[in-house]
Length: 372
Image (cartoon, rainbow, N blue to C red; front, side):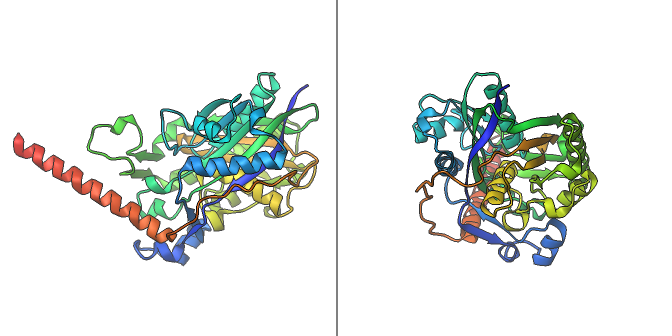
């Protein structure tokens, strides 16, 4: 039987740090309010495009695996904040890497996009379609954020990580997954202003309003991730005490604590990044995976549980058997261009752009009314 082992990993985090104190300069909030509700202290704001982050993370993952870009046969780009819709973002990564043999596709299931992409790559490797794949989880939420909405502005950040997945005859990689969607609750998390539903309605890209029902999302997220985690463990004949590490979607510390407790795994087996990075949507799980390896928390042969949920409301849980190697075969010199502004300055630029867009839209509407 063919398996799909994870053989390389690499992350790319923007250097600009937006703290809770920074948020309090333009929102009615503070460190205690944010931390007590979310567990978040800071998050990153990108000064480059999502594709640029993805290319750096991909180069680092390939070097880690000792794989040349020319040998990659598939790139799966998981994100809900792609730089472009047409052409797809995966093709931009392919061109930058010189991965000329690779098929390239984007997957958008919101915060679960990386894990759904991992399932896609794993399935194509198991069935013999490809032997080597690059799977990316990347988000650049900041340009689409409604920075005047305290309920969402404190939660999200930018980031990226990637993994290399290769055919193996050893029982490694994804052993099983449980995918699902609580579609009756899809209205609880909606970003108005992204997509063709808002085209030609005096809405400019980035001028968004967020629907976010925090209480309902909390309830459904916990329910969905617990059920998916229990289902995949049962499917694979695994008990909670056999799990070596849990790497969950980092949406909110209280959600993580509830999911882990109800799944029967102790918190000391959980990899947390939520305090430092907030919710990076599709990037949270791969970034946490990369950091678990960097911090020596991933042991050879570890059994890893990866639960997640996202807008839709998509849910999933993956059970992964790690391989023997937990250190990189090589390192990449790829870096982001220098940062010239603070995170707060970057956010204020986004806010100013949105204010100008709204003002221009209001002026156009006023002129239209005058002509009627």
